[in-house]
Length: 462
Ligand code: IFM
Image (cartoon, rainbow, N blue to C red; front, side, top):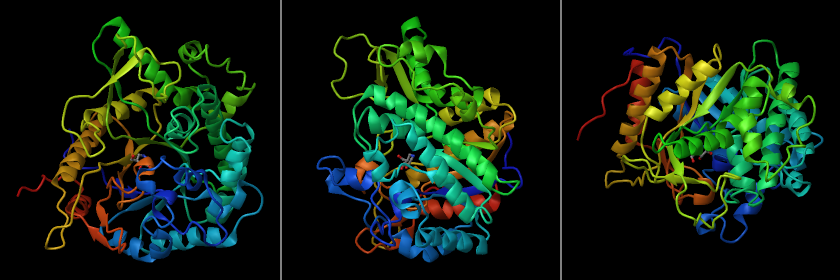
């Protein structure tokens, strides 16, 4: 295993528009599905909203300075669709785009590479009202939006991702209903997944046609590192089903140009897949320049042995025969098991499944119940240990032949954690939500030192 990261390895941090920007009513921005969802009683913990979030919209310059002090080489952010194209169609909002022009200019002035994601879950509400992701037209609207952003920022951003974690958009949003728009309709969720795939393909095509030569186009997925509890045929079949519903439903058409036959068979009782039109899968299989992998924790599944599946709507349509188990090991504040081997497994999986396709760890990190001590410091040794383990996993994958160009910690700062509101802190920078003051946590200092050294440093003791 190598002891240091290759020269040029990119160290970054990630955020997403709705989680940090705030300013939801400014400069012509219209509501997104998350603005609506947050106002639906009982959907988001404590009734929290992204109205102010971390106020990044107004504190952009300060935040970029902070990134520079941390030695970040790249910043992965998302563009808010309803901010730059209010209502999801038609003309661009100049003031909305200006925010991102200024952000990118600030980043470049500090030597920080901008990595732009077009869609991190904030669909303009008007498009949801018109049918949302289950409607095919939304994919075409996305392609128009992609072109509009590419025209505005293509001269200064060279790394682009179409979608972030389309699995969450489709299945948490339309099947489980625990994310916006909060629908619980399995057939609609499968249609949504296809139209997200199509949006990716059409969007990537629009980017390629609009961006200067040399732009690097990607999609960011959260493939599931799913393991069978035992090697029994039932448990292995449970693993296969969840792998199809969480990962191959996207990588099948994107990397191979076809939906997996077992997925179509498993979901035959829910849909006949007639929403996949001739030619769609070749659009979706648009050549990629890199693939973003978001990883937090593995899953463990078995065949269901009791006859009482959970009454809550599941994010896995047609998988009532599968039970999820908490993997062993320490857990984060999200109750997610800390297990870096899942990251190594995923990096090696895509090294083999997509030979020659460069990979990035586009999100990885952990929430803990951080507090500010009497001296004003935030000591987060568990997060440092988490990052340490995952950096080692990346190094091991590099040694095993994976082509990984960068790593983005989730997140630069504490922010709006979707249905959990502000209760979960993922940042390496602490945000005091009453003053919005930023305080780098101990993990931020450790990360800065790792970036400087280009190798994994020991976890500080004491
Ligand atoms: O906060 C989210 C992010 O928006 C998408 N990936 C997972 C993170 C932690 O839940």
